[in-house]
Image 1: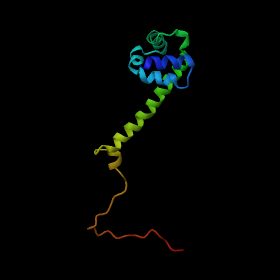
Image 2: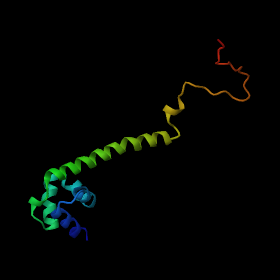
Image 3: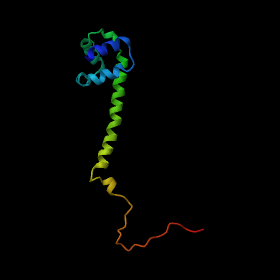
Image 4: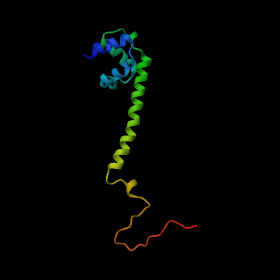
Length: 113
């Protein structure tokens, strides 16, 4: 199903085709590890000449995907840290809240001139 679509897009040099290839064949790329091996495998899979697959564009799409995944990982880790109930960073603050029953006197921060 995807083979025909991707084959036509590669032949027409359509925009974004290499990103779509990486999405569809994500597992194969992880198994083959390098863009050059993946390119050889993809040429056989799509039944097209290897010269029609631009190695530079394939590598660029792979770098973009890795960069995007790398950018998402710290954000997800930060969210998981703030969501955990035992987070020491959030619990150890220098500001102490007063209790309603405490007899602390309020001090005005406004100084008159």
